[in-house]
Length: 224
Image 1: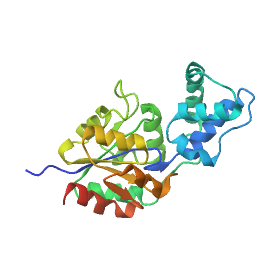
Image 2 (image 1 turned 90 degrees about the vertical axis):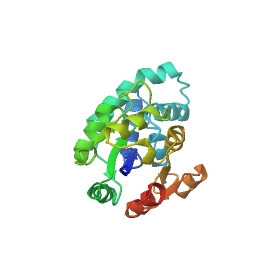
Image 3 (image 1 turned 45 degrees about the vertical axis):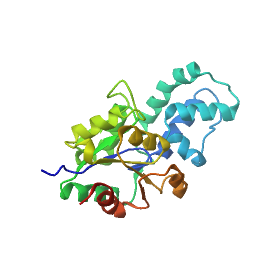
């Protein structure tokens, strides 16, 4: 019996451009303390590395010298601001939904593995109207560890009904590259994120310029 192909997607920067709403939430956190908003569109890559990364970057730009403890204290405030306006600017990348639907139609398993907090990931997917497309959703709090630890990816594959022997991860950052390497599966990195084709420097097994080409990459890496 042939194992089904399983394609697991990262969320932020891979399925959807969430940077605008993430950066807005971080700027709100700084504004609440009387600071000028320190982050802008040029910080999209920082946004895709998470809330704490944005707080560190903003604090450094403002010369605040926050410790990790001070960043941690403000993190819940950022999450609350993000929850309040989670889909104001966020958009799914062109062709993403159609590509996932095509994978499902041919029998491939699909799921999500993200370092976004579970509740926010579930809320965003529901707001975008795509939660039902994915058989699995593993977030930052599903397990005691998060990416680049391979355990969340393995769980996502299992919950999607797949097998690690015929699975891959679609992502957009070095975190996804390291996660796939630790799990022993191929990684496909998208070139339409903030790093553009420079992401090729991470030497992924596949590159994706547009979701129209997803099936061809999956077939090359996992077989037909």
